[in-house]
Image: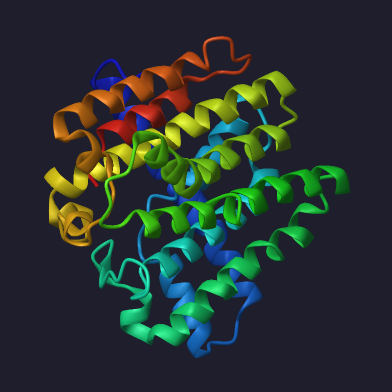
Length: 303
């Protein structure tokens, strides 16, 4: 937990270091493996490099770091996680879904390249997430471990994960829904992929099963906290920092924790969820310091 300015500065420095580390790897791999520039590769690459926190790869690396795992062996899975995440954003922005024109201050993929190309670029990113890590990870991990890691990734990104959350989110538009339905949406749409990132990092680091289970639970609550803060920022955030219009969820009649609870109660619930997440790392055998830094970053971020 961040307790003073020194901790905050160290956390910011760590985030910058990890973001550069992940970006350098993604850039070197993609530009080496896809040297030919076509319309679809430009659409895919521009989506990946249009800013972003790289939170999921950073969580994956941090989970491995907390257990003294080798970073180089984690990088193929960081790539896979970011490819999946970027695919979800490209498709989420489409006119048929959220119909967003900007993300991170830039025109969205379908605005720049057209809706058909954005659909194809998103599918290409998803396919690459399940093919790119294979050759890179094979030199480090056993086939059985690779299968387990892919199972985590596919569950989080498929019909039992992001897609299930997206369907429920669409069906909830313009409706008052109970809290359990809201929790279902955010658990599937956001939290499962974040939880998978932490578990993947711990598994590659050779973590114990009880630690992996702690990280699973921590990650699910971390993801819920991330989404609650997202809902809050849609109401009180700074458009320039967010890189998108404030209030877009309300205008789109989205079901959010603000529409469910109101701003003040949503803020209280955010801190309750964060404290529950912290509890799961009390008996963690590794060093949870940076994981807790990242949790504090998520609940206090302004973009």
